[in-house]
Image 1 (cartoon, rainbow, N blue to C red):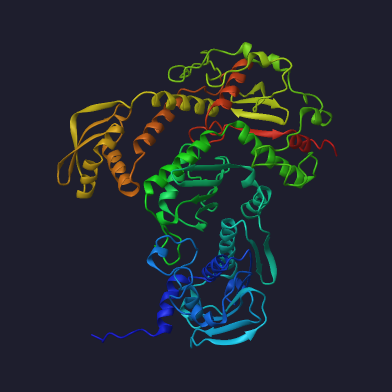
Image 2 (tube, rainbow, N blue to C red):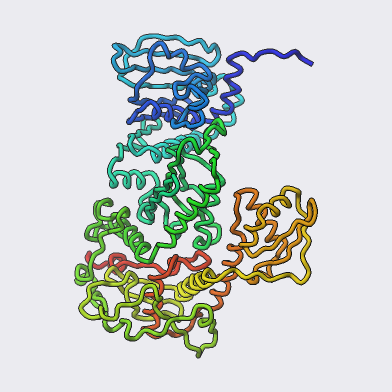
Length: 636
């Protein structure tokens, strides 16, 4: 066996570079993080050929003293931590002291820097093969510029694994996007092959932050976003979550930051997915930009060299806080929130086309997703262009005097015969104001019903245009939410099994079931450990007596192992309620009266998550008067 010997500094740095420097985007990430840690509020990133030929990052931070320049390129040299206590409560983005040494070992690196009060700047140059630092005087303002040329020039095997120039630049751009989303107080510039791609000024005001989000994530995202800001038990979660109608085919618009550091965490992903569970269609993904602020001492960032992963001291508390905050935010969304997003997006399309809609010309200011007050033209403003039918119907004609009795969500509505009647009614939580029919200027978000189309859709009009409602999908959501509420008001009943079910599991799962016996009982499951690797299932939730009990229990135990809790029983129960609500809702080709259609609209306005049915399909859409005018070339 060969004798043990100490690795050379160059080889050690190249091994470390394999963990830190994966591609040009990895270099940009490390250098931008250093620039922000140095206090820079202006960061310029310039790359050529996707970053393979050149990466230049300049900042106006505090700079590096001439005497510290050679040390800055050494491994495990940093100014950000000095003791174990510092490591356990890291507040900076970087702290390992490996980045510059790793980068310089696989490239030709030049670092120029100047500190406040110093007469001249200094430049240090290093090439990966020799690793000898050469220092010389230079001209440079206060701050630091790092140039990385010919990445992987001395490791050809690593260079062969790089993708095309476009692909590598896309990764660089995504890296800059994440950093720009993490620090609104700093300005960012990105150039590729001498072409400016992004030029973002510091965002101090609410409007400036909105502009940056729109520039990086798209105007449609900010138009469809709900702003959240919640605090509890030393945690704060704030940011933007998109309405379920703004879902994605892939998880490419999901940004989560912990104390300003972008992370990818399974615990966070599970909490978000759970919050969106019954409002997304099939395999769609939610979109969000969220910021979690916690005590640095309660989160361990020293998990992986790339620092993309963290470990929370109390993961269950963080999971519950994220889930409950997002769940409440989505539950509080009503049609008028969807309405504002639809109007804002519609105005954006009309402005891009011919700029005919009043108040929508600027793209900003006319729509305020932050305070939820977009500019909505009144019916009077559109009357000349709309002609016949431009004015809303008199309110007293559609008001509550004609409303039906309350709809019984658990019993009524399971009707299928063509001649049977279906009744709707406003919920008790938001009764209609019968006195406001005449002389009231207030218009409900979904307007007033005027007709039924093919026995499937309800057509309603408002001052903004025409609203089309899928009556089955809308009624399905209303019925589903009422059934959930009714179930929550009574305990989840369990049903004993005539013959207990024996289940073979691992020792870890058996011990977990024994430890969490009380928690499982609250889920309606009575499970006993009858052997080292054997469980006996004695009771199951009454609603789920026909379900696959063995698979259900295994899924619950798997969740307990991974997340410390499980919502499998609730998920399966809600899935069953969703099926019941689907079969118990009004069917197609059912003729509804105008009062019944208006009652359905009012119920939608008072029901949680009424923008989607139980399967995630949208329940309604808006066609603005501007869009209708454009279809018929009015005003041209």
